[in-house]
Length: 279
Image (tube, rainbow, N blue to C red; front, side, top):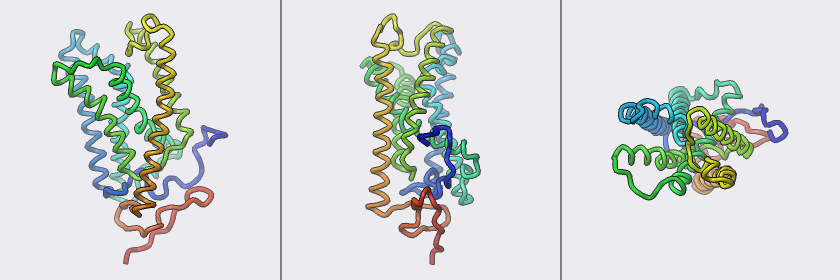
């Protein structure tokens, strides 16, 4: 993978269904939680777009501008990730084989990368907003308070859920490259927005106002993203160690119980371990 970042691997994909199972919740309960989060996120996004179309001075122009903000794009990512995660969990709970297992390998790799963005980017959004963009005065309108809490606080709650509750493995360090690449794409989008619509999505990207500080902010956020990847990676590693190694809670699976030590092992790549029928 290091030699060729575009090779998606040839080993067995997720043999113990870590993406669709939890160490504490049943597959059906995990499906319900993920579906509920997806529903809340989509409801929030659609309501925000509708509210701005109705109440903003330039009507739906404000709604269209939402797609230029990293906050909004990240929240759309949360909505779609939890939708697909719920779908895969549902198919696993119902049939014992998730839809994700039937996907081509590159789509499986993209789902893994998608997961990594979900456990990293929301924390970037939350930290930048409350540390740099929030002016310290609470919102006069209930709508403003709710929409900002949803997109700048609950987003990190949803990310933390995906770190702690499922049995997901630590993301590959190679994903750092894709996190930085997507940030670079967004930076390009921000300046395309200024060139076509005449405004900067975030004031710290304005070179007229910020001067050389623009570079400091850009590289600072990129470095912060890498650090947050390390934090997420560490939390997932700790969760696996505590729940699986120390507590022996190797997971709740669909329709069958597994004996301790029967989850998966590394033998030159991941190898599926046969299930033992419960007596």
